[in-house]
Every structure is written in structure tokens, then in C-alpha cells.
Image 1 (cartoon, helix red, strand yellow):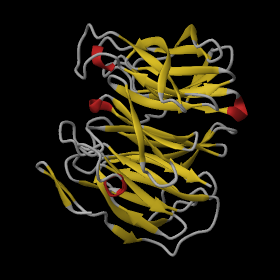
Image 2: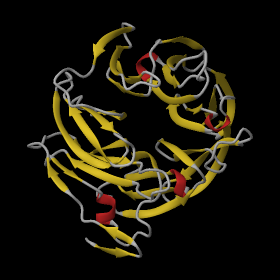
Image 3: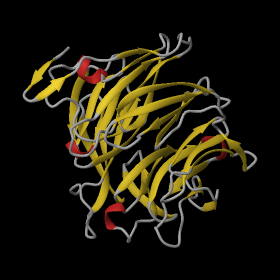
Length: 357
């Protein structure tokens, strides 16, 4: 697996025995590493849950003929339609692989692509559309609809400014608009797209600089994170009723990353300008905090950046970007918050997709 591609050295994959392995429908998960912008260091790692083995840079191992490897800045990862999709932001493409082994199928060219969502029939990709640079006159973004069989774009819907994450709920696609390139003139809306006609049916005012969005099906609501406006409005998580679109409240919790499991929302919360981080578990049924989802002893985490929860056994995974320019770390905790293990990842671990048999 070692060789030269121009001036790029391809290292062999690193296999690390982590645990004794676990049975169950989750075979493992893929981990997308961003890589520092401009370094062409996006990578995909894989954790084989059944064997308890972590494999570094599996994309290169499975695709030795891929030009320039994975690309520049890995932003999001999703498994759907039996395929593994990765948005490579600064390479302006969605990389498409087999979900079973990570072998490359092809790519979809989309400018400044960001996040992924999917239903039974299509893949949806949010895009800033314009160049990768702050600009007070940056254009509105868009969602591209992809046919997963042909890998062709078969629809485009315009959104607000600099769209980020998306959620599907009751036949609609909800898109969180950030307006991040236009700071301090942030966007503050969700774009609502009807999936049957793939047309925009409205927008919902929420808060400035939206980023994350999750559909809480049990309570028919969206959980929407705002990064605030850097002045008088702080980061928070807002609840939006579906389908009427009314903002019903907020959790009063700063939010950098969040994940939903059972009836609880798990939130990584960092104080701005500080290394202080809280790991908050919020009960959505009782609308109360349940303390920290990580208990002692836990390893020192410099920059918690990625959060995912095994949908079957509740294991918690936190990716640590550390200094953003060298190898990251992935920490595993049990569902009760007890520390289990740590492995070295690629640079800036950012997104996890579970492979379910």
C-alpha cells in the first residue's frame, strides 16, 4: 500500500486493536477527518465494532488509484442507499463509495458543498454555491437533489445564505441557514422545501447563524442550534414545532455539537474564548438537564469537535481536533458515561456514519 503519487506519499493503513469486539447490528462506523484547509488531508478512518479494530486512512488503502486521495476539507459523512457519501468542501465534490468497504464509485461535482441528508429516493446536499471565502455580498445557497443510481443532479432549490445542516420531517426538508460568510449580517432562517415537488414553500425565522438541526419525531419538533451573533445573542438550541413552524422555546444551553439518542439531547458546550467545555445531557421529555454525559475518569480533551452515539447500545464517541494541524483523537464512553478507550485519528475528526447490517 506504500507508493508515490507525484510528490504525495501514500502510507499503509494503520490497524489498532481497541477492544475485544461486540456483537450486534452495528458492524462499525466510518469517521471523516476534515484535514486542515489547503492541506489536501481529508481522510476516512473505520472502526470495525465486531472485531474491535480501528483502521486509519481506509480510503487510501481501498482506493490506491484515486487522484489526490480524498481531497481538501472533509465536511460531512452519510450512509444511505447502500452507499457512503462524503462532502469534500474545498474540493467541491461529493465522494461516493460502497458502504460495505469504502471502495470508490464516483463523485458528484457541487460547489462549496456542506452537509448531507437522504430519503428513500434521493440524496440532498447543502451548498454555499459561491467561492470559499467570507464576502458580505456572498450569494444565497442551495440544496442539490441527487439521483443515487445515476449520481446526477436532478433538482436545485435555493435556500438562505450559507446553508448548513438539514433535517427531513413529514415530507419536508428543513435547512439551517447560517449566513456565516456575511458576518455580522447573519442569516436567521430555516428554509422549508417540499420534497414531493422539490420547491421552497417558506422560511421560518429562528435566530442568527443557524448550524445544527435534528428532527425529534417523538415530540414532532425540530431541534435547531444557533451560534449566536457574537454580540448580544448567545449560542442556543431552539425548538420548532412541525409542521406549523412556530418557535416554541429554547433550552438556554450554548451548543457547539449535538446528538439525539432516545429521549435525550447530548450537547457539547464550549464557552467562547475559553477551553472550558461542558458535556450536557438534556431530557426532552421532562425538559430538564440530567448532568454531564461524561463521568470521571476521562482523558484530557483539548478541542471536542465531533459527537456521535451508537443507536443500538448508546456508546458515546467524541472526536478531539486538538490543535487542528496534527492527528486528532477519538474517545469512546459507555452509555453511562464511563471512559472506555482512545485512538489516534486523522486530522480534525468531524463526522461519523454508522454502518448497520
